[in-house]
Length: 202
Image 1 (cartoon, one colour):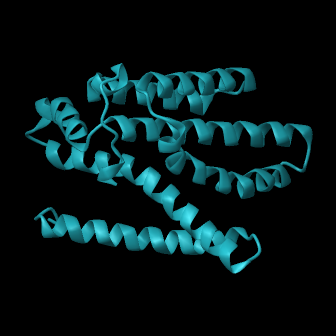
Image 2: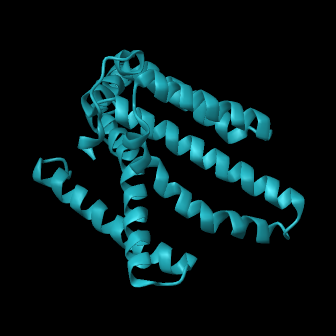
Image 3: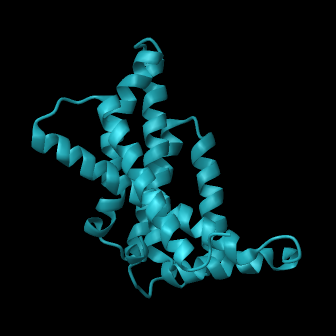
């Protein structure tokens, strides 16, 4: 997870982590509430512009964003079926897919352009007035791990899909979800053991 950061000197890289967290939160809220496909398309263009500004090539971003497309292949038809297969159902499914894609792209951009140290320092700054009640270091670590785990889960999905294709297995939501959940739990255990080894288990 830590190795996902791509060094750079762009404005996005040099922006304070706290500012990037605020912008990320605002954009995530806007993505979540938008109900107009045109506005969602505008947000997608904005994300592309941010990637271009950061100088992050498509090949670097694809491993973090691409796997979510495989999830959408299953999720979109399910959403349409739930909506009864109507035109409104397709619109709702398209908005859901667009929101998820933009949200993952934004999280990946933050991951690729921000070091874990910068994230920890940002949360230490935010929580400094509350040190009497809150352990700023632990909260910062928790948030950093949460953000970093988004592309980790996407990578797990990609590997599971590749393994299924190699075996010629048929597409199935359950057959995809079960190994993804199991592998995610194993990854969480490994992270927990690493933190415990560093004295962060209490």
